Image (cartoon, rainbow, N blue to C red; front, top):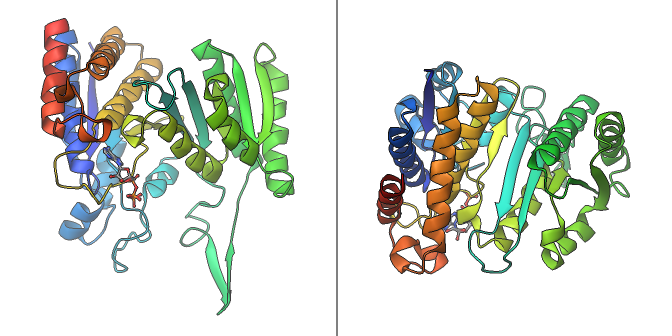
Length: 362
Ligand code: ATP
């Protein structure tokens, strides 16, 4: 049987709390299914800066390269000390370094808060747009041209549009739900860049996905429609910045950032990472909702299953966790939920109850 090595990178703010919860759930579920997992911890963010003077030390990159997949906590984007040798460090840097070009962000109703029947996935291009490749441009591609003016570069490549579109169409086909891909854009203003994005999406559709439906919507009207009729969406294809914004909107619709996992994936590597940030207002208080990070590890298991040899136990471990989360979140007992969703469980209490559920139900 294959043994998988998972690298755990805590990150900043609530990162250590939610990553440790995800690890504990993976340990319990794999114990139940007999899946062999090995964990290694790698420093990143402020923890790494304190010990090594940089937020993404070479040993961390090396450790990631030698692992099968990674779980990353949030990083406090843009606010590291200026003498950090990796400045400006962000999760974007890791995504670009390992060419994790697709950011898959599902938004699903687990609790009926604002809407009850949402099941959509945002497929966000992860390496360029207004956050262009740091190998080409310093910082995020922003420049002062004089004391009054900042110019921001937006980079859109044909090859990147093509591969992210293909990812979105393949996902819509494999989900086998509404079989609809909605490309969101602002091509009436960003004529060249979003024109190229749509041209490639259309080409990918015409050449291999005519069994699906494909539509193009302006980002502004799509954002409104997402609030009014969220249930009509299936897979939303977006460039980097629009994808980032619209996924927080979708998060709000399903009850908040505590429910929004994501997978960053490329040809060779994948990384699970909750959509939320470091949540500095609650960091260290032990009250963060770990569900997004746990569901991100479920996505990571599914990626391992489809990319590393279809080991059945990997798939089963993902389903065991998913079932337990659904059950726990549908419970009326406030001890089964964290504070952000009107429960009273701490992160640790939530995690222990989820672990017990996994053990009892399996
Ligand atoms: P950053 O600067 O790292 O992006 P932020 O505060 O701007 O942090 P988020 O971390 O995404 O943005 O948090 C937005 C709000 O959602 C905050 O009030 C935060 O406490 C809350 N929040 C985010 N994640 C969680 C979570 N896992 N559990 C509970 N509340 C959360």
